[in-house]
Length: 376
Image (cartoon, rainbow, N blue to C red; front, side, top):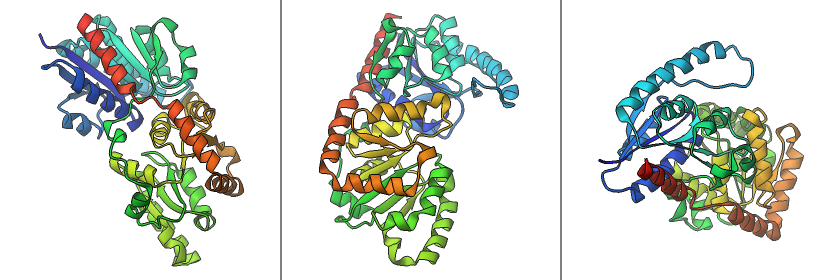
């Protein structure tokens, strides 16, 4: 009988893209005839699974919070509805193993798997684990983590530091920096700063950049990723700014809403410096490039995980952390200029990122998933 592997994890690309990376490795390593399923909250990412011939099904998503919030009035009943849905859907799939990345909607699936005696393996991307994964850990046979500091939150006998799974696209066909600068319409001889705010964008970072755009552009060319939903508004604001300051700096600035893996690779290749939020996925993608990074952690991230991520990465020498409360234009420009003129710091960033990055994360998780499936 063919083995069945069920993937779950929901919410943002930070949960889905690692799942896809692991799924790609599973497809390479699994015996012929292995069936793959994804069960989680309905989202646009379903198409990514369908492209890979992974059967998708949905349940209602609910968010777990450690704090009082009126939204709990809705989400608590939704959790129990999703638990019933999971009981029904997993009964008909009856997988040999479940792999969970955490996030919205994954806990009911993990609990249900345990109810049916299906082994579970989970992965935590952030240095401070989510409430979902802390609870899921009680039902899991194996736990993988991305950050060394995360090991202390889980039982030693079933937890391993494996890194964060990245999609295959990030491991080949990197173009030369001068060519990728030209690809984005920039001068290959001028410094280039890449600003990443995540797939959903950051209104505060975007506003800060717009407030100081003229000063920043006098120092470096900028590719500014603003978030897909913020693109139209950002274009309108930037047009107003250039009307005020003149068009002489306009060719040093580009806006983009969201980047696919190939675009992200090219942007990282082109960059001399990256400015980014401190989500685990972003940090690991930057680490592949070996580029110096200035991390601005989201101050309201759950469990302060972005701040924890940022400081653990900075300990390698690959990044600098600026707390959002301390973010000022003079401080940012000073850090940018210091990095641009300091070759030693660039080398330190490259060496630190290599030390931090673990290229076999997806493969290690896939192998462990297949062992659990085989033994079940």
